[in-house]
Length: 69
Image (cartoon, rainbow, N blue to C red; front, side, top):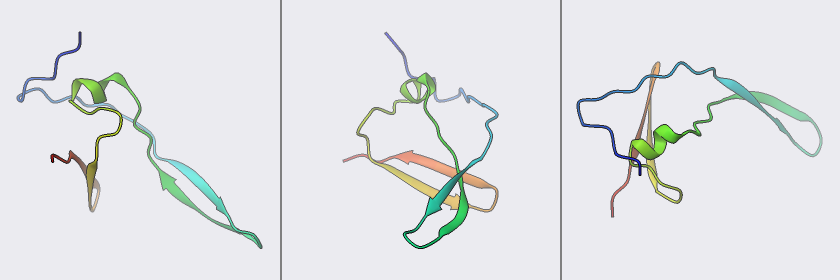
């Protein structure tokens, strides 16, 4: 059984920003940056499938917070 990280624990993982190409009916649109996070660390950080999250965007920083009821 998984256990959440202690509050003092921080997990770091180097990832690569990839891209998503959007296409319209009449022309291709510009590509946009894309980040995919899909790993067991989400479970260990107490995120579950179906959870609502808040994503905060800052220059050079993104914060993802689980929303509580």
